[in-house]
Amino acid sequence: MEQKRPSIPMQVQAFRRRRWQFRWPWALAAVLVALLLIWLVSRSPGGSTPQTSAPVSDTQVAGPPWQMGNPEGRFTLTLYADLECPFCRSYFPVLKRWVAGNADVTLQCHHLPLAAHEPAASAEARLAECAGEAGSHAAFWQAVEWVYAHTRSDGQGLPEGLRYPDLTPAIEQCLASERPDAPIRAQTAEATNSGVIATPSLRLHDRETGKAILLQGPIEGDALLSAMDMLAAGDPAAIPTSEMPADVVGDMPR
Image (cartoon, rainbow, N blue to C red; front, side):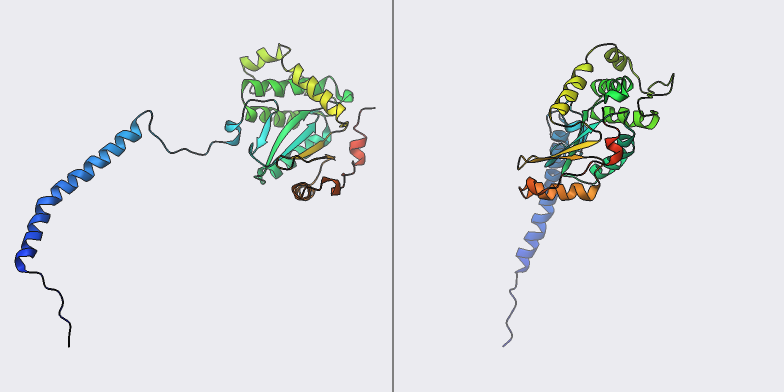
């Protein structure tokens, strides 16, 4: 036997239609009021607004050390560099690209001006320090890139009369002071005391395990990834120390 579908009396249906006709203007008004309240809250000074992802450098505390990459990354890669070192000059763009492709790494600079490259090496380090002081992490690295792009290297320094294009009164005031000398001297002494005597050199530190390894020379990306894996495994003793290339040995102070 076919089951009858529930039937609704005509009066009830009519009542429902009338009730909806009475209610829909109020429902529309309630929706409009809710939208207005949401708009007012979003416009208020204390209201929450969507946050855009800021550049990494904007989330970091002021340097030194000056950093590039993810400041929250598990691994800190310290670059011991001399701005007059020709091997650092050719290696820096390669390392920069590698850091940009590895979200777990933050790169930080450690000055190590070699005696054979003075006074140009320290003068260029002072410029980078003052650019960072007056600007930010990004401003420091911008100055480093500019120096590497224009220096004649090997202690010859920048071409005569060439001026940093982004020189500001704040940078000039810093250069006229002794402020940039302190971090350069401190970093040079720390590197020497740690046994770092050649540039470029790298120290890879795992912030989770607390382990670190010193790598000498322009280390390739695959070797850095292997070092990261071995540090993460908690066995830094298993990581072979990279041999220092002959050309880097020739760049060492004597």
